[in-house]
Amino acid sequence: MPPRILFVNHAAVIGGAELILLDIAQAFNTSGEVALFSNGPLRERLEEAGVRVHVLKAAPSLHRARRESKIPPLGAVGAALPLIGRLARMARSYDLLYANTQKAFVVASAAGLLARRPVLWHLHDILTPQHFSRNNIRLDVALGNRVARRILAVSQAAALALTEQGGNPDKIFTVHNGIDPQPFKTLSPHDVVRIRSAWVAPGQALLGCFSRLTHWKGQHVVIEAMTRLPEAHLLVAGTDLFGQTAYAEQLQDQVRRLKLGDRVHFLGHRSDVPDLMQAVDIIVHPPVAPEPFGRVVIESMLAGRPLVASREGGTLEVITDEVNGLLFTPGDVAELADKVASLLAHPHRMQTLGQKARSYATSHLSRETMIARVTQHINAVTGKPMASAPPVQNRAEGEPAVLLEGSK
Image (cartoon, rainbow, N blue to C red; front, top):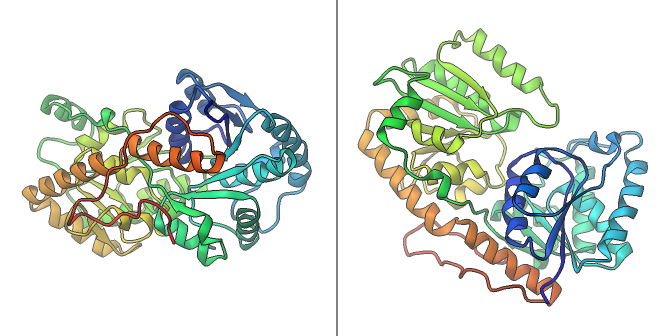
């Protein structure tokens, strides 16, 4: 009998980690269920995919606890205790607690100890002071070393950051994200022209930036670069999460101050991102802090568009500069603008980079490969083999290096 898995996620919004959970939970829906700490769009998407969902509503004070908080908000600890109790009672009916976010891991660790059930942590973040308070980092490292049977880091960069903070390297394994290529099927030339016509005239350059709106994602950098690209237009697709609207307002103010309102277009949340990505000329991914492993990087590659991305974090594990994308120094507006201008001046080079990116993402960063590796780790933790998973593909000679298993 395959192991029963209880996936745990604190939020019900749709972010990168939640989209990965959606794919994994759907793959294991015959033996897995999901516990959320709030209600929202993620529950709807999971249930549409045939996954059973339990909503264990947490008090608002728990949701107000942020990764950068030096101390938990008043009442957060008290709000966590009944949630831990409910999750522990549920956990006794399962063989494994699979924590998909940092906050879920903290609660699942306590519940796992109470229920005497193993905990696996899927680490989607880089645990550095740029992203987390030192107290949060200490708590995560302590629980990771004490409770987690295995930690699946989405990149070598995320794994290394955890070990540098004191995490036990023997527990940490790298499992890169994978994405279904089907939504990125090639658009017809007619559809490309139709989509582009909403913002640009024929012959004008169109750039795209696709991420949630938060300062470390660096949308302000590409907007500043637009002052050096006078003929180009920019699509900014994405919205803020968790009610953090200050940065989105800052971006709007920046566009007004730089008088870019006719060339920078804020799209908000979009459900047609694969089509938009294929309609732009270049995709820019400009984080100013290390990116754990951005989905947008894989999506850009699958879309077959040339990517210009910050030279930092997990991006370096799949993008080789001048081979399947271009890299620039994080926050360097001039370098970013120069890279974009150089590409726009050489359409054949843009096409070559996009083709190589698509080929690499299709063969190495598929959803099936990710699920196969996750399955291997679930089997190792529970000792109960699941159904056979797709074979893991190996790196071809000359392609960017990818560490497939243990980060040590």
